[in-house]
Image 1 (spheres, rainbow, N blue to C red):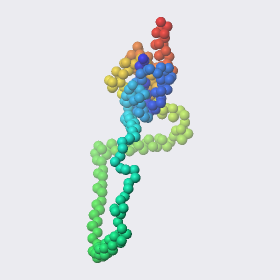
Image 2 (spheres, rainbow, N blue to C red; image 1 turned 180 degrees about the vertical axis):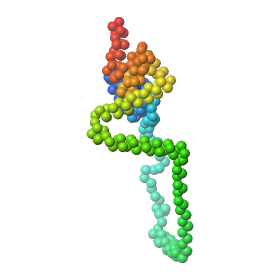
Image 3 (tube, rainbow, N blue to C red; image 1 turned 90 degrees about the vertical axis):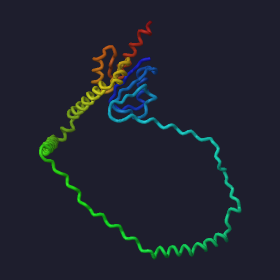
Image 4 (spheres, rainbow, N blue to C red; image 1 turned 90 degrees about the horizontal axis):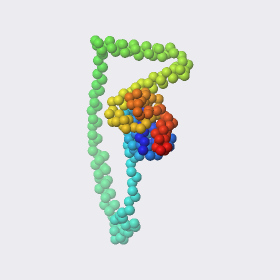
Length: 248
């Protein structure tokens, strides 16, 4: 059985791991995932471990389906009412005649009672003014305000065509990916459990651009374990590991 570790910075659905087993051509592999983002749903039945090293939390396990109850109940299916339990019409008319005068007396007394005085309105107090910064804090606030204003002016100076151009978008995407890759690698180094999982791997696979930097550094640290980008390269490594045993 081969042990595969997946490095990912994207949100993966549970069905993706079925695709991983199919692409690697081995249904008996053990999959451990080191993810920056939690999966989209419960994956405990799809992988061996899923270690979340980024923000957020793992999805909760699905609630078990309730089993249908087969116990008999004490209530009879068709309740039968005894004839003597039903009051006669004459009795109901007499009771209503007795209750009507008492009800009219209660309504009259309620109308004669004076209404309670309204509660006094609470005195409105003006909100206390926020104290203005003084001394060094005032200087810091002024510098921050000027910096924000300068960024806004610089952004307005660029034409919309340049802001939305492909080179500008590419540079912004590269910067965001670089920052994510560095943060991901630093978090991997700070987790002993993650490093122990990687040490047990036969193949380490970086699945996306955010995990490339971590994969490259892991390849430099441990040359005996192949670290590859993508599933096709991992399939070739696993086939090479099985080739000597098949030829013998």
